[in-house]
Image 1 (cartoon, rainbow, N blue to C red):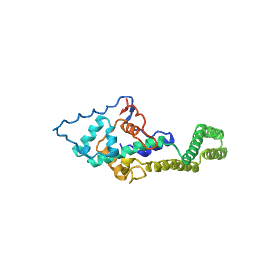
Image 2: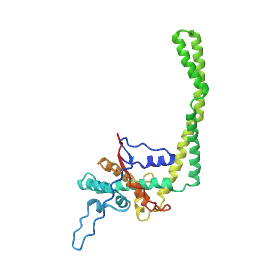
Image 3: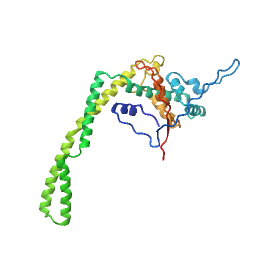
Image 4: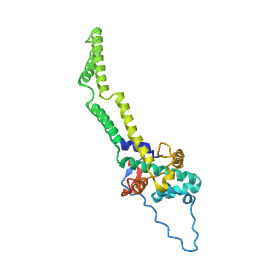
Length: 281
């Protein structure tokens, strides 16, 4: 399953978690640790470099270094078997690396004045919606719903005439419509559209700022991008990588992003290894 940069980033902006795969979640089980480095070859030894090893460069190589040993073996196996080309493996890893770096950037980079203002307005709308949801229907609307139930019982019991029932139904209908209008005013369609626009302002601003970051020796890999984050080739390669069976079950990329020296943010302590295992039954 492709790890979408946009859903993760959106969750970071809104404070809402994205959808977790139905069969997986993070648990406290320790992840397989990266394999120990291979001893240096002595003079005269022949060192064999894999197809993937020859192709890895820049961000992809740095991301690969942070994978757990099982994921490294899995990726090497996919390339050696021909199920994934070395080029796709590199581009897919580069896409995943950029996603991880962007997720860290969007959560940690200081906000601009424009982003702060848009974020505050968006939160105000969200809080107003939550307050309206907690309050529920207006009291008169709840009373009207109760009266409608009682009127229905009276009609079924034959204790009210058709004329009276029709008149009361019309009166109750007006009260219900008035209550619905009152609820709609709490958070209008215009408010919802404005909230979405404000979130796009923040997201777009941070995406533009991320695209402008100078990654030094890795900068050539971030120049031609789609949506300021990844190129279409990289996104497509990531899709093919997971379709071929690559199954990343650790937080290796979060560790990579933490250990990467992002200009303006620097490095930070890597989080402990986490293993993404099946949900307990």
